[in-house]
Image (cartoon, rainbow, N blue to C red):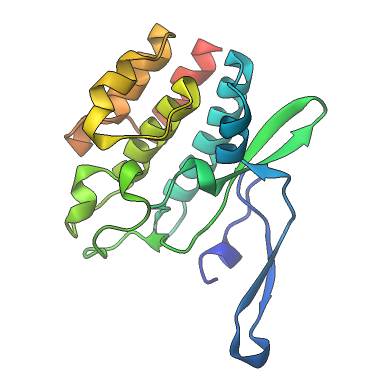
Length: 195
């Protein structure tokens, strides 16, 4: 609640308020149509949909990473946490679920979020914004191939991406060395050029 109440961006789920009536916390947010995961279960995405939704997610993460005075790391980027709404005939994405988000600090809790999206370093307390970049790469791969991420088949799944530019970007996002991964701004720049 602390983080969600401090963040306002067109591609972050809008936090309206919260109540703790009868000891049960209740968050009030804008209502969205469906999750990206549900859409992927129904049908493949067009190249335009992949471009638009991935740029929406990248812009939301970049906003969090540039937050002052301390960057915010989402730490649970997944297709279940990207919610969709319609703008005309186009699906648009908003990042939701700040349950594992944290202000960047010296020591971070270990293994937040869904493990199939997690960067290797999430098993350590040494986490930076690059954990979100890794998860974004996994999400982008999932959007392209329409398969749930499988850490045991990660390389094989990346090879299934038919768009060479996107495949190369996903590989960079999934680099084992966090420092070798692009920033979210670099991801936005590359995605924008690829459109």
